[in-house]
Length: 537
Image (tube, rainbow, N blue to C red):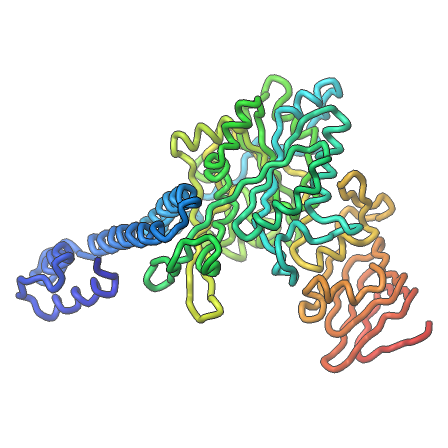
């Protein structure tokens, strides 16, 4: 099969030699014909036909490469690998065939008032109905990520975040508390990736005695493709070889992988109606009974097939995806889809006032229907990466919230900021470990003593604080942060026991300097810089 480069070569040669009738490559007869039309003065431009031909070539060639990889796959993994490849082929087809921007800026309309409800207007359910509602719910946590961004090995979900409890521990505690309190049977489902599956399976054994039934399934394993050739870089499909050649394709893969696992059908048979999906590292994403009552109670029960929790933007959230009205449907707009000339508009807190928390409530029967009808529509996200070996590759991904436009009766719900408490970096870890939050039955709640609803803005220097192990070494104890507004720390800085931070505090140790904040120190609206080592206080 000819490559794109060969096509270009043929066209150049044909333009230079107008009368040659013998194709240079037998497989390029169509390309030859197209080029000749141009040479001999036909009005029809060859560009569109040429593009179509190269797209078809790329798809055919990819299919051949995937067939070769499948042959190398161990028999025990062949079925699931074949399903993964089928999904990847569809995604790749969309990638090569879709042209132009996925969003035309002029077609974006202001959200209708009825499109986004307010959480404060929801009613709590009658206590007599709570068990029945909870028994119709499945909780899914997206657990495919590693802790590498914070210098940790293994799944991010097993990093201790509060009182030696991990993300996973806290989630299990939350659901067990619900099940014990109401006598319900809410299952916990973890969507793992090939990166996190083995370690997660070992960890969840310790929950066997808990009143929570735990299920796991794996999202797809897709091949990374060479940016130039658009072909897989993998040489073999073995599950434990050449790991850098594969990737988990983002949380948009949830719907198809959930169905492929058999869990979708199993939960429908059990009478489950809604699934609550959220990131494992969002400590604010707990089961909310008012939301559940909104979806399952009253005359409107079941009519909202997809509910996205959004919350008000701050300057820290300017890159977060937002809800828009587009072609008479609700749609998720991500920054990657925004034309360059409108990025500042997208980031404006005044223009787009809300952003997606990735807390999603979806009707199971609707997921099944849409997958059966093959009408699930999510934009393809092109993630360019540069590998350590110097190779430029592409990962094709999708966002789980982008499916909102495929569902009937979809709505946004403006929730309090407390439902969005992600831990992406050690900056966030410092907040959740501090006295800003109280821990109860696995749920973190803002301390009632704090006078503000918002959390402080924390910026820790990545060189000295970016890795969890190094971060923890720099705090004899986590400072009192109840009255803190803003904290910036840069350089070689350590904190003694019982330090209190208030207002705006900036601590900067220049290269070669070191600053030790002494035990018991109270810093209020202070800038500390230079070199400071105090042994007694």
